[in-house]
Image 1 (cartoon, rainbow, N blue to C red):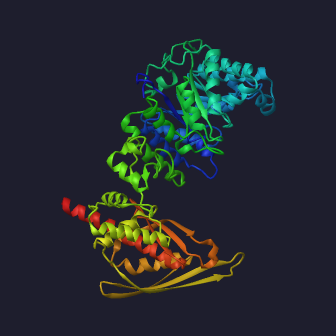
Image 2: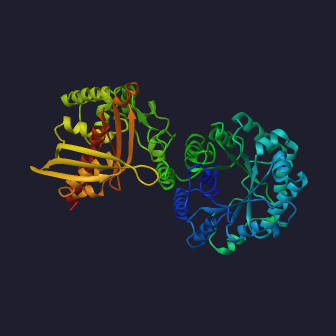
Image 3: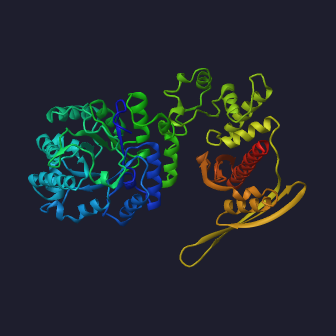
Length: 574
């Protein structure tokens, strides 16, 4: 992105550092590189890569990016101010930052006097010297500096005069960006707005001034990287610094706080993909970017890049091994899902009735959810999404709707098991192929006492008929469902080799009537994949093995259906 774009907002992603502080999230070097390249393609101008010198992984990450640079984004090194009572040139921490070879460096310093005296254990004047000395040293080494004012809002509320002094120290030293950080995440939007206005007035800044940013961020040569084309005098920028915002979500207002700051004049927004971060997370860029660009009219990225936001969000979820939030705004699977029959009917006529933006603008899609609240409009819309052309007058429509409500009354749930619903429709339309017939199965499970803790082992025997041939197979597993799944696949793979590429990616069990105790009816959801597509099927029974078998069998049937469709398409194109 260049500054010539109308109303530019500079997006700064900190998923690789702040986001990785989320509990249960850990990134390898390859994970970080994969995410960085996806963010680069998305059009994020600043990507914070980590703290070089803090751990070997981050050092190697920056080395790898020197060998294979990003295409447009600036990779940013992150670090604190120098230690108390040292010079910046003597601090080995800053030498590691310089060795990373980045064009931009983000330095965080203390804004809250409490943190200076209690956390750093130094004086207020020494903290100002630390901020000033660190930034001046980095500027003397040809680096451009973003200053993150840590605990800014808490510091300002407790001692506004001193908090302002820390910003002035950063300004005088040559920082080009001053970023207000709501580090504890406890500030509310009305406070954010007022404080940003107060600071702009106190520092006599003009937030609309774009001077100093009339060039593309990405540098093309090593010389340009170490000697950025910035008009300076004695290492200091001749232009007023720009303002940024960095919010945390402890009060569930991180996105609102960031938007309020932009409205008040801030032009850099820091956040993480999917809102990952310590405690309750950071401001979610997957919500911020479309709100800024589609609702407030600012420019964050190209339209075609914005249209990949959902795909990037879900891909990063896969990389960090966390399930995507189906109900996330803009990018969630349910963000544009419609369940009530009246809603579906209205959306089919005019999507604006129940959609705040066209889902394709962020790369998402409309979904019609099937449940016991569904009417014929839901069934027709859902059938159309699966390629079945039905009309209200068709007897199959009433049959599908009646069967749907009957099954959901028994405990089935098709909202999260669309593959099972497609099979239900095909059965009503006479299009469901029976690949095999179950003759019966037995499952034997042992609890074995080993050295230390007990362990279990299961064996399943299954008999099926395929093309008139009876097949009897047996398989073991670490549990009864695992053994049953293995035995079924073993029996079928000779007839349907593509089953060898299918595997289970998720298995969920829900007790439907807990008051019945161990006799309760259970609902099993099984998510399957062939490496390219995923689909979910459902089974319900008072016997958990039977419910699991239903879901597993439909998963295999639907996988075969998908493979058959691919094969047919290929043959038609030959």
